[in-house]
Image 1 (spheres, rainbow, N blue to C red):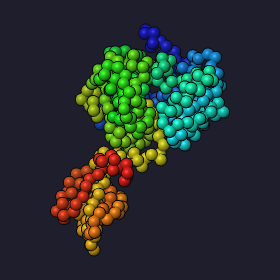
Image 2 (cartoon, rainbow, N blue to C red):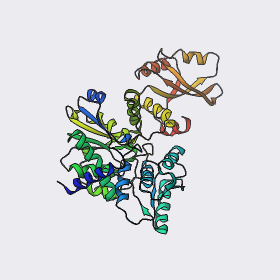
Image 3 (cartoon, helix red, strand yellow):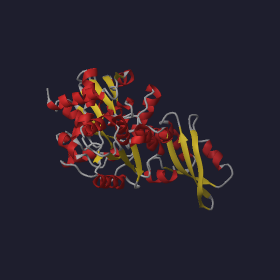
Length: 407
């Protein structure tokens, strides 16, 4: 037996005194959809609704004599450390950006109770991280890294140990990648012969960049929508394990497409996934030929989803699916002009937004219109009718800059 496997199994056994294993469940809907045997490793059902609890437990149980534990996080890592501080009865200080949603602050405080102090510092995570590390140097606290730590990686590998015990050794594993702790742990546990598909958000593809460059690189820009996996640079320790990854084994998922997966899993399965937690399921459509007939385990890494974000997720899903569009319409300033436009709408077209922007000329005005339909193909007919009626318009649905300002 491999030494790393032995350590991961021992860590998994030790965890049972603190929290139960998460289920590994066969999903009938996904199995039928992709003509495969699809299982979900439900890390979204852990006590803190993510796998981060595992790495925190394993790293903290090995530290002796720390005055306190310190982390910088606005999400799952903070909640995992807070839970374990209360469990071990040791103080912890969590540094969070000032912009952290109140829901995440409240959950971290709930898990840690009296053992946790939360400090809101910095508008951006880099500033928060620098403050946390400076505090460690001054106070003698132990900095708990979210992924760039051998003991954290070992703790995340307990996911793999549980998969093996619950569902046997699958023919493929699909998992999300952020900083790389989970990816490195699963890769080390199962070894190089296990087919693994690593999935990153398109706006935070740090492993993809590292594989292309042959070394970790820092992304110039990161889209923070998939906040549980949008990391600018793969961790050094995870990279030591992942550096032999083939380019074809790393996929990127568009953020708007991830939203369609979140909505589908919520509506059809009643499973609440955060954006990072939906990555593995979202990628199945990209590897449908490779997985046909295979037993595949998707790791749903987290379910810490703030339902205040649901309107945004639904909106992005509709736009990606093509059933909702936003137009800027040049509307003549004359009686009946609006009625003429309404006459171009089909029976399944619905106006969801109508906002007069300004008069663009003496006889014309600009209007922002949101239109939702039941079938994306309906827009072809709508645009043909608008063209025939002589309307001037611009489809701004995929214009990111205009969307940020207007929608």
